[in-house]
Length: 420
Image (cartoon, rainbow, N blue to C red; front, side, top):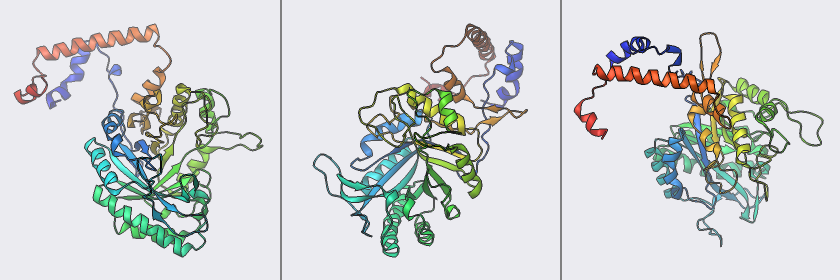
């Protein structure tokens, strides 16, 4: 839109009878620190998966409004008594690819994501156990010999720091959910310092939701991520209000105390003066989406709307917080009820939903286009809303016709040819 249009459009609209209050508002995006603009997008897992077969979805994810995709990559510790950390390129009988994704696949997928207009986050992770049928969670691993383990672990993160630099990735997350080994602060600082020598983007770490009060070295990283699998409701098909209330007060079955997840995350952000990014958050499209959101339960009853409401509750709870750094939903290629692909929740993965919102003159929060989207799902507009919308649209069309008649939308011939 040229300068002449910008100066005169409000006057033309008023002449044509369209109130300025009905014009769309473009939210002003306030800075939230190093993570601004907020991350919005989806995770891709790679254990026994390649990412490039999914690259055809990158333009679709971008069209959904997302700005980021996140890839993980897995190395193996043979058992809980071992300090070894090595890639695993052994093919399982039923799997077409190996547990550790290839460098070529990661680099190619990153290039394809960039071509679609998406940033890329990379997270190296470890699995404990000798094979896919005998594996344990990294959060329980406490290295028998920390010095040996972290030497081997740094070899992994250094490798992917160099790969992330080569592929132009925006962030390297040097660890995820390693509760039992987070205590070795000095070793983690060395891992991070070594990665910085190879990668010039942001360095992050993903803290498990159960350890945020104990985590002690947030100053060492540029970005703090959180695997935000807080349980919110024990109910079947919980309502939006129940899910939102669960962020502030949740009581697990058999427990006498309640959990205030929102306050815990807010305190975490204040303690480290950093935006908190939900590096993993997700809910299954089932009738019980939020009682154990970290788990894909067997034989669930499918309920896509419950997943949608759980997404909405998270966004409604955090989008207005200046310290919130956005969310990456787990996981697009999960292959089960957790993926938002082709479900109502897919409409909520974009930056139009992650914010940040603008603030009006009197301090009220304007959630922007996603707020309208959220409110419209499952309910039809009232007759009065339809009437006002019809009047506004008709008047806007009259204004556009007036501008066209004045020749103010005439484009250079080159642009007119491109619009054929």
